[in-house]
Length: 173
Image: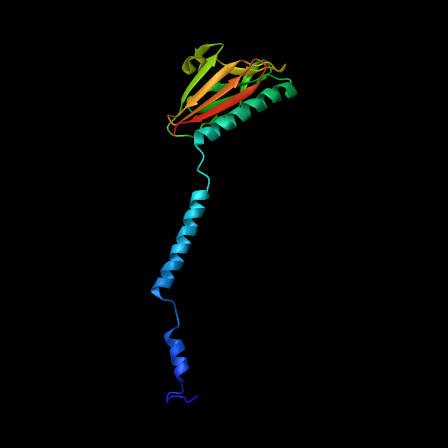
């Protein structure tokens, strides 16, 4: 093949003119990437509601207290506050706070405690030295229904006299 004066042949010039991507090709690739990112974003799970997560944790904590009271042969209990709850243990003739838990949600949720069909006023009950609900060393418990609501989520934790803990979470849509 004959070459030009600059030492390049016509085939080399034609290849060099076609090098790179056209604007259409770049836009098609960007569209495909955007669709893939959108599909991944839609398949990610929704962020869990903090109050529903806290309700599950509280129910687990109450179950653990009911079981540990029988294993340790010591009464355990829970005192509710506006911002959380305290785990208590009966030792040497008095109730001691073992650990504090915060709800960790804003705004502070509304709390309703029902024992034996009666609503317990948290302000009045907080002045009592002992717990609001207790789990006996024999496996018996204070039957109660605890409702915690933040406007979007209602968590209901129930305990039978036998210490069986159940919970239900209802989220408004």
